[in-house]
Image (cartoon, rainbow, N blue to C red):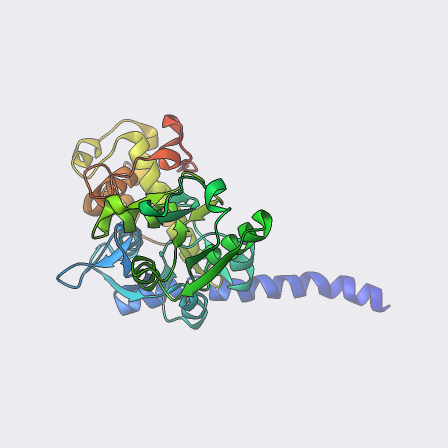
Length: 344
């Protein structure tokens, strides 16, 4: 009898659970629309990715990803407020609702995906952890460094700290890790001689080397010691918002693949290419309607911010002081990992 009753009630219980989740769907999107701006957690001390210029405006690759999402929802790249977060502050800021999303050189890991209650969007920057030393220290490889007794600087509360600890154990190296709340503090300590080496994502090390007082005095060792897929994330309680972030990122990538840029998008507004019509939501094609936003949301995003390649080049590419090559962050058609799911 109890078994029969359970079998009768189970579908209703499941239906109730689904309805409960659905009732929360869109809660962050509505909050953003009512507020008139998106609040995004970013790095404020990492040139090229997230920092403040002389006017106090946040600039960088990750900041522009935030702006792309704000544009998709609100139609304007200026409809945004930034919150500076260090590594340790990220989970609390996300869980408390202090920020709507985070775009701050954050590695997608199992524990963060689950314990933080986060939904990660597609990876926007494929990276890996490295080590930088001063040239006059006299080592040129990880093998040589492993023979030395050193102190190494790392960011507290980051995968960087965990990865370097694992490496020390695997190498049986006589290294001591000094942790700091952010990249600025770690770099200051390293340059002052408090650490013999500094470890972080390769992109961060390149950024720090390029902006150091004497870039030639530093050497980034060639060894990559981890995989670091970096990208934006949002709370798990709003699937609609997560979908908007996801498809905005993929839209940026797909636009580059199609050759649609901020400069030439006007030439594509009457394109007879079905794929471009679906990406841009033109000619009766549904795009944003699936997400609860304007069908032409990617027109707004590309017009105001450009495609993925434009955002990369503007902030990190060969024309900047960082001079980063695309590498793994090239399109899949160019041998990289950037690949968008179909707008269909």
